[in-house]
Image (cartoon, rainbow, N blue to C red):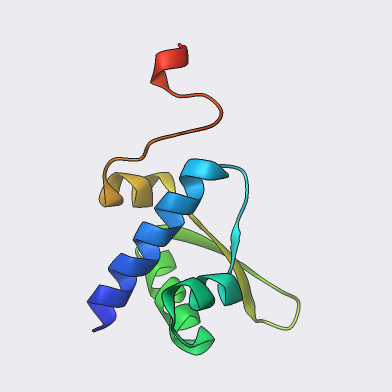
Length: 91
């Protein structure tokens, strides 16, 4: 189950990256989109960060608030179609 959730979170963050490369996703938004509780999303994000697949932002109270897929995470996920901004066809 945990592996499935990791894959779902990584996929969602990769899809979010396709549209907003400069922005992080909010943990409550990730939980809502995946239909999961926020605690399990936070735990999964922390696991993915330890693996180097996402970066997380923790607020001053120690709560995980934001997450973004890393380049290593994108490589792990596979193909990403950059719909906005630069992609290889613009070079």
